[in-house]
Image (cartoon, rainbow, N blue to C red; front, side):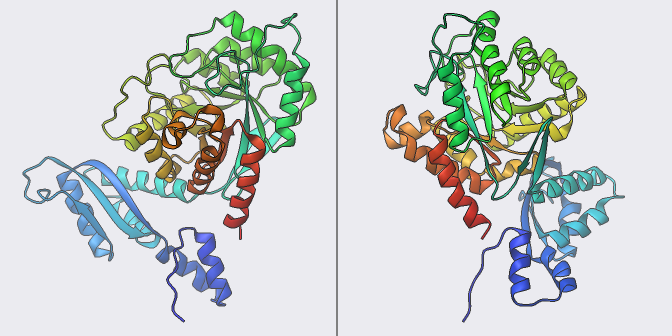
Length: 404
């Protein structure tokens, strides 16, 4: 009996070899030879690309470059490296002392491959420790304290006292946790397309009493969905441990708050602002543009003193993206693994699902579940959702299959 296997994870390949009783030393040698990658490098000087191609060929691997790279008719070319982990390791060793930027390329290549191969993360959230990884996708339950949420689940009602959290909200959150939420994300300002900004005072009055009450009641981490430094500060003072910032810490004062409190942070990609982001969004190269934005956001955060191990990235589904953009991101989600940080994805009830299925907001559950499962299979570590119970059950099956 002959069978062709598709294996992309080292641990799966190791298990196959163990099943056929391969020697442990042999497994260590052979696994890197069997795990292959395509590595794309943008805009290399042609002299660098030509040397790189020759080095790859010398290792039994290959590199694809533009047709006129050798003739000198073009100054630069993109380059696609094709090889296994063993070949890439030897390539890095050969490039470390070479000129024309090849030594820097060796360092970047090593970091990218190490990040890509990393599967498990541990978030230190103060009294909470959250393990993330393949087959351990976590759920972030959405708590919209707004009257104008796009998803028709806004919980906000003007309370008789703005100093006290309404009991129905606490009950709602406890229900989310019972249904499988690992994190609770509280927001007091809608970020739907065309949404109008909310004043600082109003956002604080909506969110802080709820966070204060929840911190005394629940035993899962609380996230505050805000881009305002003062809201973030008060949320952290009252029990939140994660800042979910749709602007990816563009505000230097927000960076200072996160750093001072040693909080975790979600850095999200958004093209433009909520009021205008869906007006004909366009990209030169979608995945590369988002990757570059998030890479720079991580660097800014680290420069401000934020621990890299507390950073989560979010490609921003629906934030300055067309339906086609959203589908391309989910399809290629694994590319974000090169950033070396946990990936959060929010697809729940979003408009691209409605456009594909021709369904109104409250009839997008099945589409949401499908997109969530595919995102988890593609590498998402955290899924931000409204329908916690249904997504939790779907992920339980997905995780069981991935861990089989």
